Amino acid sequence: TSGIGLEICKQIHIAGGNFIGIGRNIEQLQNYISNHQLEFSKVIKFDLVDLENIHELVANLEIKIDGFVHSAGIANVSPMHFFNFSDYEKIRKINLDSILVLFSELLKKKIINKQASVVFISSISAIRGAKGNGLYAITKSALDTISKVYANELASKKIRVNSIQPGMVETDMSLEAETILSKEVMNLDRSKYPLGYGETKDIALPVIFLLSNASKWITGQSIVIDGGRTAVL
Image (cartoon, rainbow, N blue to C red):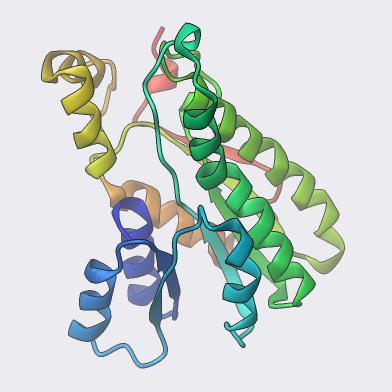
């Protein structure tokens, strides 16, 4: 309901689809739904850290879906010698545990249609050893791995599962990083992107491609979209 997730919902609408957005802060997406008078799209206020009540969330959906995107995520910048289990547990619950529980519930309730497409939003942090980014990277790399497992398990139903590994995108999360790391550090990082930092639409539009039948032969892939960052030494 914010950042990349919000933009994905908007692009689903622009592409002619309907969506259900789930998140903690629903005002922006609710306003979008109201302003565009979207009859069949809606937003549900729910904090995915509340793992025990995800089954109730799914039970109340009473729909069938052709696509599913997991874009919830939080980050923490801390060297590993300052490891704190409570910080790790919070990040893991949102970035990884929530998808394991939520996706399992969706499958149990047979809410996901055959030939559906599933997309997990990972990060290039999963494939780069950025200092201080260990906890975030652990959860995102696990997300890439489980997407490949799901792709194999669900292939008989023609359900495709892929992950996208974005580089740094201009969102509230990147603005928050600037307050923690300083503007100078962020500008140095930005200079390492040949095409500069991305916009939310740069991730949302490839997600729309993966959700559509145009990608019907793509599954089990982790796709880097990073403005050239991982191509630079």
